[in-house]
Image 1 (spheres, rainbow, N blue to C red):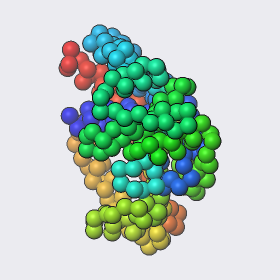
Image 2 (image 1 turned 120 degrees about the horizontal axis):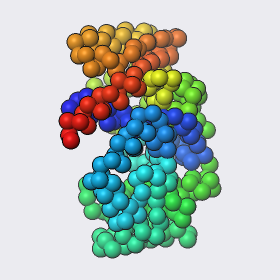
Image 3 (image 1 turned 60 degrees about the vertical axis):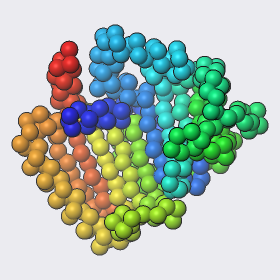
Amino acid sequence: MKVISFIGSLCLCLSLGAKQLDLKMVSEDSNWIMHLDFESMRSSEIGTFMEDSLEKIPEMEKKMKDVQDKFGIDLRSLSNLTVFGNGERHKGIGILEGGVDPVVVSKVTREREYIEETKAGKKTIFSTNKGKRPMAFSVLKKGKIIFGPDSDYVSEGILLANRKADGSKGHSLLVELTNSISDPGFLLFADVEQITGYTDLNSKMSFMADKVDSCGLVIGDHESSVKMVAFIIAESEEAAINMENMIKGGLAMMDMKVAKDERMAEIFEGSTVLRDKSLIKVDVNLSIIAIIDLIKKEMKKKV
């Protein structure tokens, strides 16, 4: 089950010819960013295989059609998702593009008695306090959903989605991330030093955060492999040396476990750890062919 969970998560992040992250749609005070490109996932080798396989399962086709009819969201047409924030716990802005029918989504939302409706200019914002945390969202005519914890966050997201607000100026590490793989389909970035000023961390997390300036991860197709590249900028070269040794030790232990598992040995093609002063780069390569073979075997067990 661990293997299947791993593969399932991986398939959500695959990319091929992915769209670059558009920083104009990210607020200027953002200290963390996550970007996924669903079009790239579907066009990747594994994504294509999964889509073709699911089309042969009537139950899955029916479930996706039901979601589209009832809620106005076509899961097979989602384009991309960008989520970002400054570090405040449970607060951020999300922008989902593609596969959204504004008329159906608005109609279904208005049928819920616990949903409140307000206006931000000409745009409608739906909000609710039901559940563990409050949430709000707005549906734009161009098939975008903007969501956040309240109407103020959503209003800012609307301006960003319509290119009417100042976007992020970026970060030096973002350049490293986007250049490490041609067309990354999944990107995660965190300016750890800035985030710690907005949230309380436990002693263990705080100790680790104090050693890291910023970090990030990208995932994408590279030749016949799925490549995962992680970057860490430590707060000092001394801290980077310690982290480098810890990472190498962890990967060495993983290699020992992989060597005892034939299936995982076929998937993992290798890893490298490089350090340049306070910058650490970690590469992990996974075999696309082995991943697809494993998915095929697991799917046969369910038939």
